[in-house]
Amino acid sequence: MRVLEASDDVIIPPKVSAIVKGRKVQIKGPRGVLEQDFSHMRISIKMVAKKKINVSVWFGRRRDVECMNTTASLIRNMIKGVLYGIRYKMRLVYAHYPIILNPEPEKRKITIKNYIGQKRVMRVQYPEGVSVFPSDVKDEIIVEGNDLRNVSLAAARIHQKVRVSRQDIRKFLDGIYITDRTTIVPMD
Image (cartoon, rainbow, N blue to C red):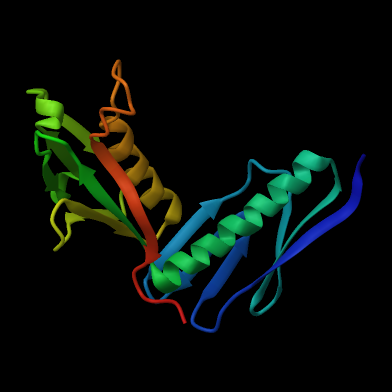
C-alpha cells in the first residue's frame, strides 16, 4: 500500500549550519564539515526554515518510507559528528600470545602482529578522517573521527581482521572487540 506523503523533520542545533542542494547535504559544525550525497534515494530533501531540514517521500511504498527514515537518521548522525565527534574504544583480548599493534597514521593503516602466535602480519586500512591510536589503558585502542560511518567502518575492519576461524569460538576468545561507543566531547 502506498502512503500519500511521509515526512520527517531534522532540527539543526544553534552551532551547526546546513546546506542542501538537490539531494546533497553539507553539515558544518565546530569539529568540521561533513557531506553526503543521497541522490540514489527516491526522496525529497529541503530546507524549510533556517534551522530545519525536511525529508519527505510522496506516494512511497514501505521501502521508500524506510529510505526516508534512514536518510533523516544519517543527517542526525552527521550533526552529532560535527558537534561532538565519535569515539569507539576497542580492547585487545588474548589468552597467551600478546597481540602487538602498530598504528601508522600517515599511511592510514594499522599493523597487527602475533595474533594467536601467528607470524603473519595483518594490515588494516582505515578511511580518511579517522584516527586510530593506543589508549593510556593497557591493551586498548581508540578509534575516533567526525563521521559515524567511517569510524564504525574502521572499527569493524579491525575487529573482522582478527576473527578466529576454524577454531571453537567459545574456547578461542582472542581478538579485538569494541567495548565502548561514545562521543569525543561529552554531550549536554
